[in-house]
Amino acid sequence: MAVLSVPGFDLTPSSVKAALPTNYITNFDFLNQYLPDTYEKEFERYGNRSIASFLRMVGAEMPSNSDLIKWAEQGRLHTQYTGVSTTGAVSSGTQTFDIGTGTCVFRVGQTVILSSAAGAKVQKGIITALPAADQFTVAFYGATSPGFTSPTTDIVAFVYGSEFKKGSNGMQGSLEAEDVIFENSPIIIKDKYAVSGSDMAQIGWVEVTTENGATGYLWYLKSEHETRLRFEDYLEMAMVEGVPAETGSGAVAVTGDVGNKGTEGMFYTIENRGNVWGGGYPTTLSDFDAIIQRLDKQGSIQENALFVNREFSFSIDDMLAAQNSYGAGGTSYGLFNNSEQMALNLGFTGFKRGYEFYKTDWKYLNDPTLRGGVTADNVNGVLVPAGSTTVYDMVLGKNAKRPFLHVRYRASEAENRRYKTWMTGSAGGAATSDLDAMEVHFLSERALCTMGANNFFIFQD
Image (cartoon, rainbow, N blue to C red):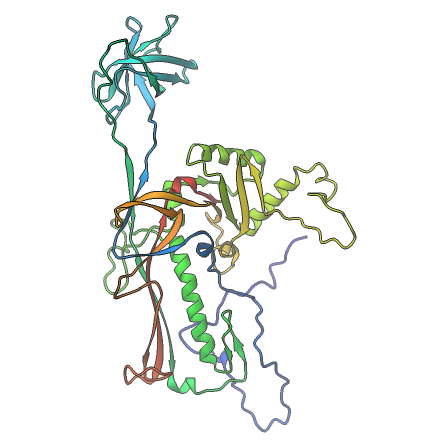
């Protein structure tokens, strides 16, 4: 058995630029002696249709007064070189290695571990010379079969200490702390609702209602409030889905009033600076073990939240249920009294395996008019670290605690562009022009800062 495709779900909204005939009574036949029995109140068949909630749960909002937001994130404390090569044979227990590109930060006197998959060989030694900017020479501690077969190009090298003789000079050279600079630009998001003064005076027979509690018999009230709710959803989706305009793209070449620079949204940032799980979603403990091992190589944040679509959520439930010895033939997932009046809970809110993972459904990924209706290369969920991180704020000029995800909106003492709304025209209380209409404008200027993106995961098909 399967869910039939017909009847399906309606993907066509009634929010269009023109008034629909379905929104108004068209049959005014007063010669008909039979009147229909009508329900005055509009039925909310889709429940709460708004999807904005994700950033409110995991992030924060704070002002910014610049077109560019920059911050510095810590680099690694230790340096490891991969793909190190050697082309010279061992000479008197020493061998020279080449890191490939860049300047080697190893120093004379430091002790190193060198490992190569070719021959499964590991050697330890001490650096005796730096013959070139990208080279270092090692004297091996071992006397039996020291060094590596020449040529070898897959060597991994890192420092584990140093050793000096009695009465010797100190370490030559020093290392400077390394920061990684990231930036993002805010975008201006707008919307508008307009209604003529005449339509504002038109009473309807349907009592409309919206998610924010607005009720009444004036149809324009519903359209205005739905525009507001839709704009609030846009504020979140733009921060999640935004991408920067690439050089040479059509968006960059656009002229006129529309924007052409874009912004780095959460999905884009994780795909480029975070961790990506391809091929659907993890369904076994071994899959999550691979995720945990990657997190070990990143910031090792102990608490993480999984925001997932429905299918991903069910797969996690099934995975956890399978760990119960009675899962295959019963329903004892936890400690139950198993009374006949018990409401059986077949879902899990989280689990712990090295790290703590808390699972919650993300409505945006399930909505069939949004991400829930995308099938190609779709996003099934994201892993977001909990808590905050310390970064150097370029504007404040000092270290500051910031949530891993937070929105920066443009604001100053004279102007706050977090969420602006105003009315123009000559109807509905507005008196700004001779236009016989009320126009409600919405505007926000904001950008999302995804800090420590190396601690995030995105799960894609």
